[in-house]
Length: 415
Image 1 (tube, helix red, strand yellow):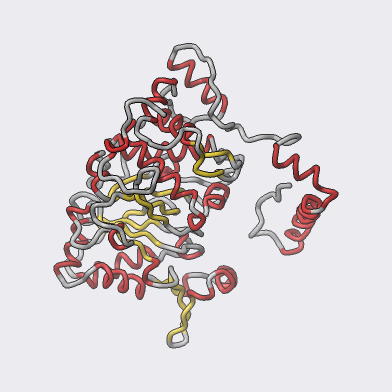
Image 2 (tube, rainbow, N blue to C red):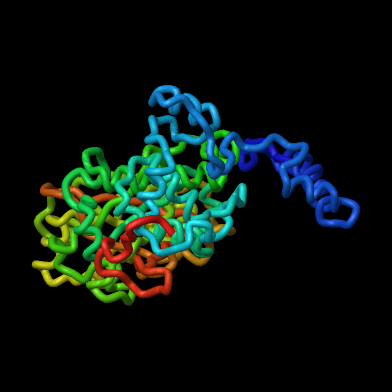
């Protein structure tokens, strides 16, 4: 049962008339008389299945790049861009950088609930154009987006343009050449482009997040193709993200943040107060995810902005506190209808000072995630959050022990 949009913008009476048949269907499925219907939904019998079935079985295709792409595209196994053919040899080579059993599963992936086996993850990594040594990062990223706080079910199906944003920290980011400097959100760096793309393909082929089917994003955003970068730890005056979250500097980690596309912030002030005021206003934009639904907000500070703050005595905690205090949206900018919604959705983020109401973009200072990255220039970026909590996980062996370099996992052949 699918309740057609629009929903929020229709009168309550019409919304009720749409919801009642859905409630009836849910009750039937939940009761004993609806047991057969529930089994049908689980198996997909009698229903239109998403175009993306699990890519697992061997298939035979003409040995021609165009024929291979056309076959995969017709099955819904791509993101619309050409793919690298996942031959047995290429998948086996990808698997040499994992000590996990290829048949083992990282868990079912919503909303199709396909099993995220190591083998199918490797297939998608090959299709995305990844080098085999990227595989430990991809496996860790999959674990992060499957963690409950990330809310992958919601990210996959929302009308919002939310998508995983991957941040890699530690020595492995440097070993693999994951770009942390100029043009880090743009093209030109294989590791960034293909690691992020592999996650999107996995979400599509295993999780069933097919655009205009399970993926209901109204507009989408370019970051839904790929969004992966490293923190520029060498250019940061402060402890990097993974150290803030309790890991050793020598431990490599992947952080998955669920959010919208990056929004550029130009700020040419020479004083930290003016700079942070501008950044805070850019984070607190009426109509953005940070107004309606951000459990966290991500700020990527360019190295020049970070250096200005550090030179004037600001550590990361103080920067975060200043942004928290200033990143607020006046209700004069919000409008009454939106104010009514926010009173229900985000009442704990509404303050009244001198009789004037304002909305904090997050509940507490620690909900503002700060990383330092980018090249030369007076630029930073705001990545609005969503109903998602970022998850940081170490890159490890199968037994959970952190690895210092991806070569530690390399085997001579797949298990």
